[in-house]
Structures are given as C-alpha cells and as structure tokens.
Image (cartoon, rainbow, N blue to C red; front, side, top):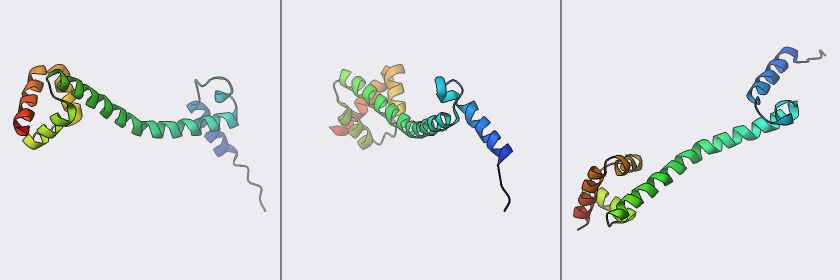
Length: 118
C-alpha cells in the first residue's frame, strides 16, 4: 500500500485558509486548527447574515413608510391596504424612497389610498 501525504494540495489549502483569516486577532490568524474553526464559523455567519440583511432592510422601509404615513394622518396597514385596493404596485423600498425624497408624490399616494378605502 502506498502512503499518501497530500503535500502540495494540503499546503495550497492551508495557504488559502490563512489568506482568508488575515486580519483576525491572535491565534485566529496564525494557528491552523483555530483558523479553520474561525473560518467555518465566519462562513456560517455570513451565509445567515446575507439573508438577515434583506429582512432588516424591509423592516427599515416599513418603519419609514409608517412614520411618513402617520405624519399625514394614516397608519401603515391602512395605507398599504388602500394602495392595493387602488391597484398601485410599488414595493416597500420605492415607497420608502418616495417618503424621504419626494414628499409631494407620497402625499399623492396617501390621497389615492384614502380614496380607495372610502
């Protein structure tokens, strides 16, 4: 039976891992076992947080829309219900941008929503 050492591929893999762990504190960037554990955890967190970022932005947009709608005498849920009844298809990101950068257009949307609910 031949003894296999994986010399070059193993060295390349370790080099790849150590490059990714550059900037980590202490042994997290110097010690092979710690580097591997740190990177596995970092990859798990980055996978999870790529999904959480989308949720957090949606929450932010809803908070902004709610605040802008309440300033005009209507709450978020009634506003969204009115828009859907009026057949206006704008996503939360667009509504949030309108509320911040184009208040006149947002006022128009509020009136449309009020008209559809009445």
